[in-house]
Image 1 (spheres, rainbow, N blue to C red):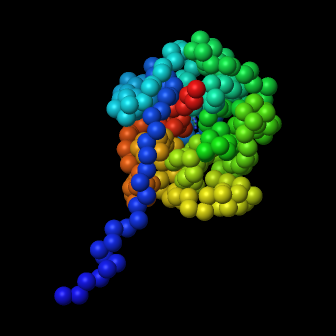
Image 2 (cartoon, helix red, strand yellow):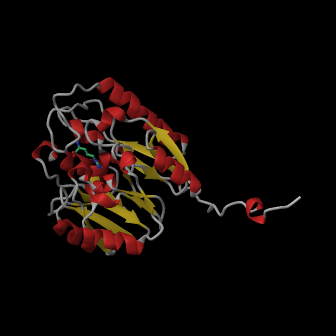
Image 3 (tube, rainbow, N blue to C red):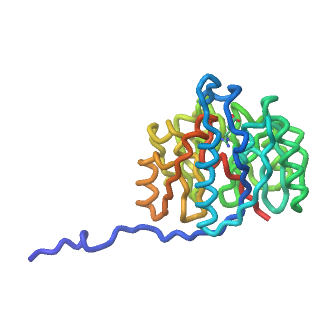
Length: 281
Ligand code: ARG
């Protein structure tokens, strides 16, 4: 009997560690699509608010099941996009940098989220520059990746660097379907990311390739349902259930993908990550 040693050795899958998260969410009680500020939104298509709430509830329950501390901000009638809590600000070191939205339809959300941060003991910094919070700012270890091109102004990258004293890397988005950084990059842990190359300009791509040579490269099929818009605790990665390539790739690398269906919220141009704002005390 011949033995192939190669077959006996288990492939080198890294061991991942989950870190309990604290997040802020907003129930989509007033979700609908009545304006169009990104290509996913079509006010002519019907939306089902109760289905949106039910789908959102599965995401909320998933986080509770993972042991996360989930905080809620009250939704406001007339602000249908408030469910996308990631845009409400950016929080590290107990400092909340407020959002200043690009489009007038969402502008009242900025002060609403800042009020919540203040009431919950965060040190709030009023933004001078246009920025859409964690939609465009992603923390990877000690470094902040910052998106621009469609929403957050590049001046906000300087502003946020000054506030947190961390390195901020500007990345320019070029495809309107992936208008926020969190639709084109998924942060998996302190060193690993997944991204969609076609969403970035050449200079940004060069930076990503150099900094993250082992990154997961998203497929266009997964990207087409905002599959990268996911939330990881370092081991568990909550993703769109339809993002099958991403799911396979995550599993192969030792992560635990957990699929949820947020199809109704995709009508507003958002997914898992958009509904999630991380609170770092
Ligand atoms: N309709 C919202 C907008 O266009 C969707 C926001 C999605 N949020 C995100 N973090 N990508 O502003």
